[in-house]
Image 1 (tube, protein in one colour):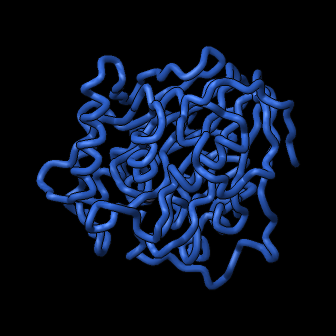
Image 2 (image 1 turned 90 degrees about the vertical axis):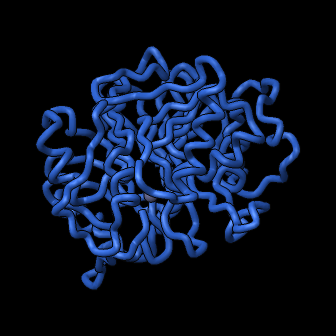
Amino acid sequence: MRHRNSIFPGLAFAISAILTTPTLAGDNLSTGSTRGRLTLTCLEIPDYGRGAGLAVVIQTPGGKTFLYDSGSGYPTKDGKGWEGNYNAGRDAILPFLRAKGITSIDGVLISHGHFDHFGGLLWLVDHATIPKLIDSGYSFRGGHSSELAAYENLRNRFKKVPGAYVEAHTGDMVQLDPALKVEVLFPPHEYFQGNPLRTHKKDTPEHYLPNANSLGIRITHGDVVFLLPGDVQVTEQVEVLLPRIAPEKLRCNILVAPAHGIDAAPEFAQATHPEVTIASASGRYATWSATPKVYGGLGSRVFVTGTHGRVSVISDGKSYTLDVEREPAKPLFREDSEFKTSARQ
Ligand SMILES: [Zn+2]
């Protein structure tokens, strides 16, 4: 159902770009305060040839705003622009914040160092005040990926500012808002070191280990529980997470599907058993998504951003409502949907 709020009192913009950047999208959104409610919004990252990204805006009951991942942004080879002329920080997050009357970002959690998750922050960090970065601290050793190096550089910018960087691991509590319990489920301090038997075609350690060491969090707002597991892929969902995490920590009401929900492990779906599952995938990745079949088969309501657009869940701590941008013209489930191992996550 649609959810409307009162107008948020105008405050001085902490994000200078909000004042100067033309509206790109989303001005028809409801605006205003979410005080007392937790609103978690999964933005739509369009398909421009690079596949899925993830950007989640968390508006806390106390009026703060955090990001869990910042959507995609792939620097061009000359370093002067963005592939597809798209950066989610500029083109998805900023317009959303403007439309909501949100004037500052209180912190950013980045699940892992891939461009489809931190690319938006590459732009935001130069156009907004970002007081805090929280991540798992994972650094892949042994590779020379410019992508991973770009994230290291970004993380180091925060490390240079006292108190601006927080490394979080299993069992840590992240302070976002007194009304929320935000527990880090993974990775552990010693990190997942990989599986020599892993044979997932075309999936190198340089790719799957940062995914497997995603910062996975569980947000509890009263009776409503959200699970955000980053890009932990199906192999590690089953072989790494399920044996190590207590079943009651995995159960949730709302799941942001791991690894964009392109593939889906039935065992992980059973363990989490969400009422609502949101897969952030667009274009062919949305078409290939196994989430409608696997999670929908368990009775979960499934939303795929490439089909439904922006999806918001609004919790009052006892129950929640949904605000979904568009309804699909036809059911999500396709008998011919298939998983491609070449999919980047
Ligand atoms: Zn991803």
